Every structure is written in C-alpha cells, then in structure tokens.
Amino acid sequence: MLNSFISKEVHAGIDEAGRGCLAGPVVAAAVVFPKKYKNKLINDSKKLSKLNRYKLQTTIKNEAISWSIGIVNETEIDKINILNASFLAMHKAIYGLEVKPSLLLVDGNRFKAYPNIDHKCIIKGDSKYISIAAASILAKTFRDDLMKKLDERFPEYDWKNNKGYPTKKHKLAINKIGICKYHRKSFQLFNNQVKLNL
Image (cartoon, rainbow, N blue to C red; front, side, top):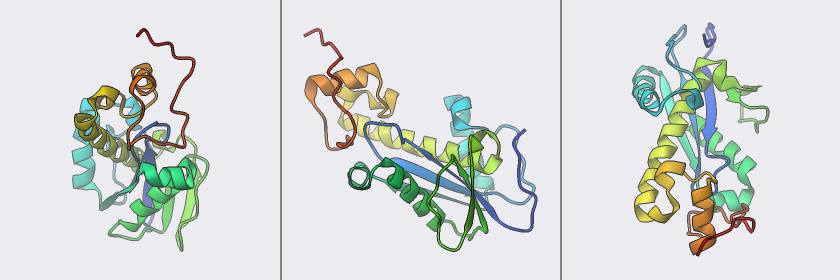
C-alpha cells in the first residue's frame, strides 16, 4: 500500500511524463490530497491499465484539495534541454496549485529547488507515495490526450499509439518523411541503422 504523510503540514506530490519522447511537450503534475487520504487503487501510472488511469484521473481531480498541470513545449525543451524542461514543468505545476504546500515530494533523484518550499526527492516515488502516484496519473493522461489530438494532424507518426516515444514505427516514419514542428530537434531523431524497404 502506498504511503501518505500524516501531518499538520501540506505536502504535494510531483511527477512528470514525456521526458523520453522524441516529440511533444514534457508535462508535469502536482497533487495535494487531504490529510490521511487513502485510495488503494491509486498507483504508479505505468502499472495501471489505460481504463483505470482514466477512471482514477477523474477521482483524483474530484478528491484532491488541489491539483495542477505544468507544460513545457518542444521548442523550449530544445532551448534549455530536457532535464531543465522537466524541472520547469514541475515548477509550473507547483505554481498553479491553489494551496501552497510546505513540502514537495518529487519523483526521482534530482530537482531544482522551488523558492521557499522544501522538497524531498524520492526514487521510484510513484510506487511509494500516493500523491506522487496521483501526479504521475494526471501527467500521463493529460499528455496522452494532447498527443492523440496532435496525431489527428500528423497521423503518419502514429502518436495516438506511441505518444511520441521512439517506437520502431515512429522512427521509420521520421526516416522516411522527416520531422514536423512538434519534434524535439535537440534529440537524436534520425536512426541511420533503421533499414527502410522502399
């Protein structure tokens, strides 16, 4: 069962989605739950089915004290690199919270300190703390929905299925037709080892 801090202080779980993608933004979420909040179904988004992620997305939004999404697009990613873009997306999510947390529980082992709020980095935090798991769910479902909308304009990259990750079909499409404005130009987009049967 995932832990939840029982304290008079307000804690926010922070996580991001899309860091390893070749296209689209990196998206972060911040979630603040009521004290002693429990939900046995909330878990790391990667361990949940698509159906359960979307069911829990609604539950989290309805039952959290506050939640927020932060987005950094591919142009900004190319300017400041993906690590800094991930931190920026997290900061945007924190800024959007309606309540100011006293502690940030951040998934992973690195974070750029947010002004005037303490933080704690937790490796595999989305499997350990309910607020981080909830943030992972919100970040992933929001980004997945965004990539499905972009797929309507660029169906050749199969983003509705791969969400911008470097799948074989995505890489083949890049090598065959090139890139579009939503691709991250600073990433290794072309794979010379991919053989095309033209």
